Image (cartoon, rainbow, N blue to C red; front, side):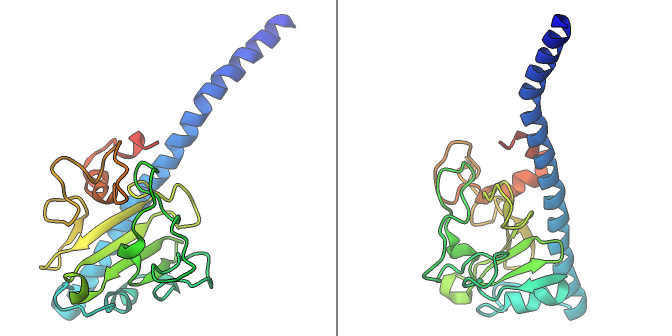
Amino acid sequence: MAEVLITLGIIGIVAAMTLPSLINNKKNKELETAFKKNYSVISQALNMYYAQNGERLTPEYVGDRKLKPTLVNYMKVLQDCGWGHSGTSTSCIPNYHDPDRNSQVYKNFTGTNNINLNFFDDGQFVLSDGNLILLENNGPYNNNKMYISVDVNGHLKNPNRLGHDLFMFQIDNKGNLLPMGAEGTDYYDANDAYCSSTSTNNMNGAGCTIKAINEKDYFTKLH
């Protein structure tokens, strides 16, 4: 009996040591799969627009907050959140300009700071699989910036961190969809300042999208 108890104790210790790692690996694999799927969904939507209209969506020709009503025609939208939910739906996040907004909705890559919601407040909608699309598109008021961001497991599920489950893309002046952090995007940095394992900058993680695409072990290294 004593030997059985010792064996069971050893098994319990080993399980306690390995189970958290197995659970984390499973979650990270789910994030990787969801990321790849959403990247494809966004790309397909933009390509369908091009096929139908014969021109690319570009920051120069898409007016202030006109990106959302255009994109929803090419994606399977479950819920249109307008510019932010204003307390009416927990599936969406509050608009940046909402006085009751929760600034702690998302953290940066290292989880050390709240991100800047100002770049996610020009339209939101929830896709049929529960993922949340967040847009930045305020025309000449912000140098024609056009970002498409996606929370690949929905805002109701953690980790809610930039570069973990929240990823940013940018549409350039030619209508190309660029992973944020690629050269030519607003959060490109040769020294990886926006995808750093140590930085507390509130936009650290914005530049991780390109790594999530190019590095095979990107998601396995998340913690």
